[in-house]
Amino acid sequence: MGAIFRVPLSGFEEPAGRRVALVARGGVPLPEVELDSEVVLLLGAEREGLPDDVLAACDVTASIPQTGAAESLNVAMAGTVALYELARRGRPG
Image (cartoon, rainbow, N blue to C red; front, top):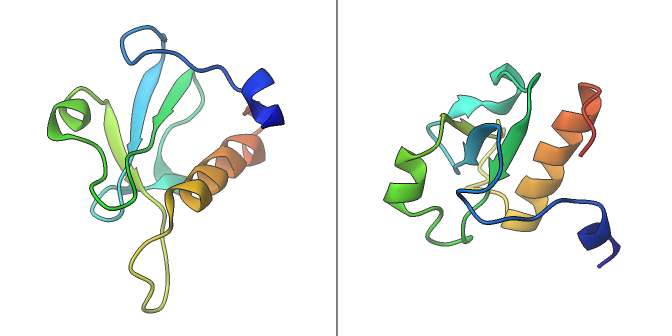
């Protein structure tokens, strides 16, 4: 709950920045995505993902590389990994 006071939330059309949609598979590997400027991370529902019109409005789709037989991560874990990647690169989450 405490993150709501630190992580800015807004409507889709409001924030400035590059929109990076996280998808379960088929996107650019997250470590290869340019994250040096302002970034808006978009995460969809665990089963359905993001709607097609939202994906079309994004600048890039990214996937978290996984090994083994795992099908995908749940949305909470995917968000955690994406925010970690921002922090790892010296970007505040």
